[in-house]
Image (cartoon, rainbow, N blue to C red):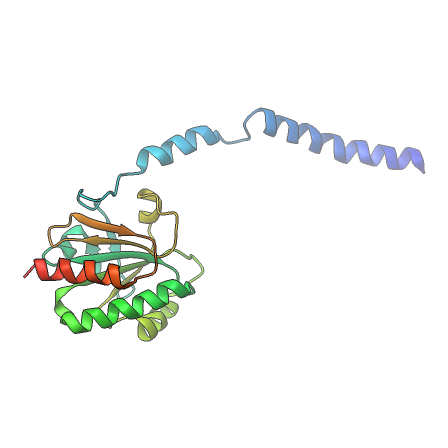
Amino acid sequence: MKKTLLAAILCCALPIAVIGLVYFYGGGFTDHSSMQQQTESRKVSASVGNAFPDFSAIDIEGVSLSNQSLKGKPSIIWFTATWCTPCQIGAKKVAQLQRELGDNRLNVLVFFVDPKESADDLRNWRSQFANPDWKLAFNNGLAEKIDIRYLDSKYLLGNDGVIKDFNTSIADDQYLALIRSAVNASK
């Protein structure tokens, strides 16, 4: 019995241990450092004072979006998930401000980063927290490209596409004042 158990352990455990050692000491079956360098080399800067990086996306209604489609009026590019409560609260505040300023004076493009969400989830989120003209899209790699690390990350762009502000906090009175200032400056 002991010999059979020992033979079974050696037959199963030894190959697994050898594969594990090769993987651990040999860097795995994939060159992770090379993959990380490739990802890092594809990242671009999205900092205040610079133009927002080029992107293209298709919103949940099938409309093509890009930097060019946002130019001409101030824009918010927002990264969130439907279940992010601070984002929901902030969206309601921004939607109210947008209605006060006039619906046609501010673009809002929201990228949803949770891959489990559906187009219906996004439409439901819009009906509860946003305005009907907000463009909603699934993250297509843009969040990774510009190194988004937090939900509720928001870029405020001037009508020329230049980043005026980057914010990861809940939309408070100070942030709403920045939006109002950008919209008023674009008259």
